[in-house]
Amino acid sequence: MSGTSLLEELPGELMIWVLIVSELLVFGAGLAGFMSVRWTDVQGFAAAQSTLDQTLAGLNTIILVTSGFLAALGVEAAKDARTARARALFILAGALGIGFLVIKFHEYALELARDVGPETHPFYMFYFLLTGFHAAHVAAGVLILALLAFLPRPRAAEAGVAFWHMVDLVWVLLFPVVYVL
Image (cartoon, rainbow, N blue to C red; front, side):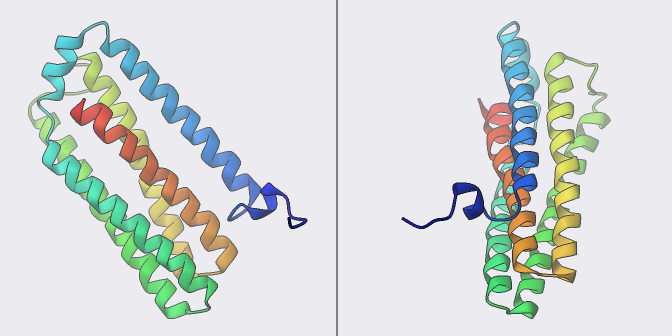
């Protein structure tokens, strides 16, 4: 057994993990609230949910998972001092993040065009709140990936991509709960 502690083996810095855990707790609380309120109006939530575009949301899932894969490859390239490859991978991962946001804002536009907003029904309040908060995290993640493309240092890449994977994980949880179940 080596003399390193578990904290020393975490990729990135301790503070990024404090941030990630706190963000996961916030999203978890939002999902718990969604599920709690859903049980008070199962039919209303199902009717509202049926108006969402599952195809676009599914495409966004593929986009984010692919982006996370490319970002992970970027970390490995940064560790191997393959700077040009790391930069390209972080740029591609960030571009996919932008693609996710374009699709998400298109979804919002479709809902708003139908005069559906957060005040329409509790489902939509949670939909806009949870997916909007997630979109803000995607935007932050895209900025982090852009910084990594500019300066692809291994330790920074590990921390930044850990955040990006948290964004992926949250979407993988939001997608079935908000769009499918």
